[in-house]
Amino acid sequence: MKFSGLTSALLSLTFSAQAELKLPAIFGDNMVLQQQQAVPVWGWATPGAEVTVKFSGQTKATHAATDGKWLVKLDRLKASFTPQTLVINSGGTKTLTNILVGEVWLGSGQSNMEKPIGEQRGQKPTFNAEAELAAAHHPNLRLFLVEKALAVKPLADLQKFKGWEPCRSNVLEDMHFSAAAYFFGREILTNLNVPVGVIVSSWGGTRVEPWTPPAGFEKIPSLANLAVMPDPGTNKNFNRLPTALYNAMIAPIAGFGIRGAIWYQGESNRGETNYDTKMSALVGGWREVWNEGNFPFYFVQIAPFKYIKEATNYSAEADPLPRFWLQQSRAARQIKNAGMIVTTDLVDDLNDIHPRNKKEVGHRLALLALDKTYGKKVVSSGPAFREAKFVKGKAILKFTHTDGGLVSKDGQPLTWFEIAGADKKFVPAGAKIAGDTVEVSSAAVTKPTVVRFAWNQMAQPNLFNEARLPTEPFRTDEPVK
Image (cartoon, rainbow, N blue to C red; front, top):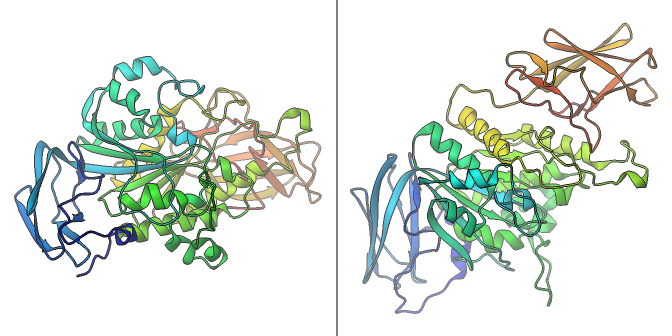
């Protein structure tokens, strides 16, 4: 009996000859099943026992393998707001109720994904938190929260979780559910008018490596040594070790039908020089264990923040953040069916690493999904540098995604442009919009060769497109392809 598409986590669970019927925690009352694709349903039963699964007029049957595992796949389902019942029989019976069919998304990352709407652990609440919570009655938006756990090897089931719940104000507060993921899910629900399920598995302060499956590392020679977790010894706080979070918080749900994933992480990897490669490992690994092909993966470029305090004599040349932004931009171009949102304009306090405008983060992630996944005619990206020409002492810059034209968001002169000659000594530059281009110059540089934009940890530039989406940080001598 083959179990292709089911995560290797299931391989770690053994059952006695009289094992009772059991389902993974991710299957429960109130859940949403993914529409328009085959939906895996799996669990454990007495070895050799027949298992039947009934849902939405379908009946699927199989037999549990010698280790008790079983798997069926439901045929493609149609979106439905009508609550339905899933019944599994194998000696005993498991009945799950109030199930909807629609769109399911996974949200993951570190603290900016984890951050709830209200105040938590000293973090300020998101903007308009009280009003947003009061209005959060969306019974067709279902929420599932994976709680923090670690494991040396992939687990068959979740250790800790808060199961599927219809969205209400008290649910958001009790779960401390991700604000960014909630706002994303709410917007998908509103725009598509189908039920939406959002699963969140996140942990503040974590790096990308612990979230990555061994299969992701194995496909990239330079990272292959990370596929095997080092022995954590007696230290239970090993959440920085490769695969540790994947093993406990992703592997048990891998294979559950989803449309795609959203990701907000990077602050803990800011000093990296190969984050784009590690992102490829993460996404490639997740796609392999889900076995759903190149499902959509949309992520957030981390926001400006005073990582290096002014008292330490800040230098843009030595600041790793702008180069990290380039790596994130590169990942968005190089990973198939991926996209990135820019957040340079969403910071209300440069001394707070958790920007409070998570509603706009969710909105921009939803724009990517609506545009790229669902085929809606919406603008989902801000301007991105394409090419530069240096003519008569000035740089003429062209951009993609100039939908509706380039604009200064606040109507003021363009900010955060710098220019340099062959010596690469940058000076602040004047910049003006000229049709679909930006002209950049400085009297201090008569023969410019390079321009950089938003090359500073505090950069909050004002160059946008007419859709009010910001321009990615860039350097003309290091174009992102």
